[in-house]
Length: 72
Image (cartoon, rainbow, N blue to C red; front, side, top):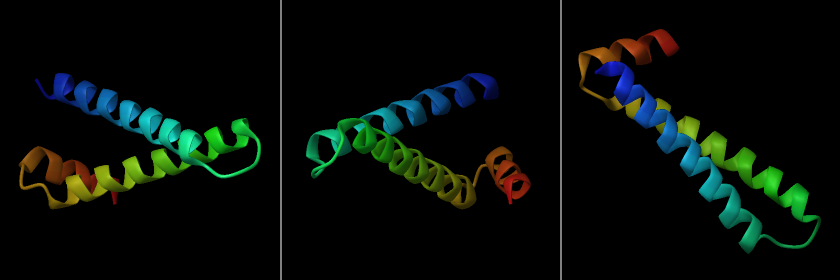
């Protein structure tokens, strides 16, 4: 059960990173498209990781609270 939930979260994070990178690429300023894509992916992965850490920290579930404590 927990493994399936972890897989769903991982898939959601990958999707978030890809969507953030795509939006950054489309709406970005000048410069190389490849550099903008990489910058967007980097920004998206950072935002996703930050949001995940925040969710784990604020979660009241005992299992995720333990995972957040282990991640610190």
